[in-house]
Length: 385
Image 1 (cartoon, one colour):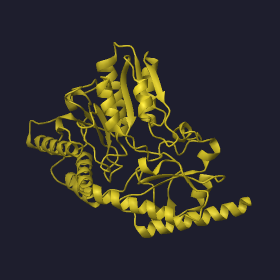
Image 2 (cartoon, rainbow, N blue to C red):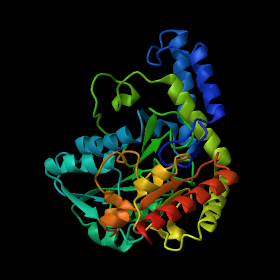
Image 3 (spheres, one colour):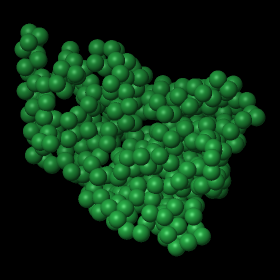
Image 4 (cartoon, one colour):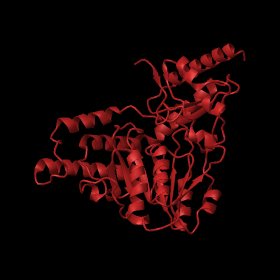
């Protein structure tokens, strides 16, 4: 493919080192079932997976026994919310808190718990997409059982202060779950320091394979939750199913690389963003939907008033970008994230999501910015602007 890829928030290419380790796991004697430890093949696979569990735990400063493998962050979110309800909250009444800007894999399980009798409180964000900490603290009351808030928003790049949120939740004795699918490996995370009880982790957002993720469960505050799948005793009985050794190997390799490259990656994408914005400066009415200070530089929510994002994307045929979350980009529904930030339907329709990554080159940024400027100018001429 000759197109330029600027949709890293959707998924990232596999790092070469990740591919090598996965190929090695597939090609060598790592095919044993890690649950069959009666022979050397199973024991070898088991030991390999435990080494990987340690690598994943190290990135967030957790104990490896606190990592549960899942099929991805969507399953991890469901397991965290529904599993903690079944184990800790089932016989309690009260409220649970999340925000209007969350991923659907958090909002939908919350709706399920609402049907079971819990009251769901949805926080509206500030206009720049951030969670208002004062509003959160006032919303939490003696009946609050759980708070679930994401770290980096997948559509806007807004970076929430999960350390302060964790402090509030621990003080109020409330379970705190974080969806860290977009932040893992990109910014520093210390689950103990941030007082997180559960954290959902993804692989394919950080140069690892799809179909594998993990859930961190704080061993000191929660210990365990109930499974939401039935049929086996794997993962301490929390998540049944035969573990995919090669995918776990790939995820662990990606996490080790992320730890090594995190600072360089952050500096690089910050430069990419700065160059892109400088290069589209001639588009006078272009608007960034978020506050630059509290936004992860790798994700840009760019609004082009009076224009249609789909038309822009169609015109930029050699540039891969999106108009929103990959999970909802094929839907005609306006973004619930941008809507909650106060944008009207026309403003939402004119918003692009541009995301940079480790392999984005400055030349690609310049080419993409020039292409965007050209198509915007062309569309404005057609509209007579």
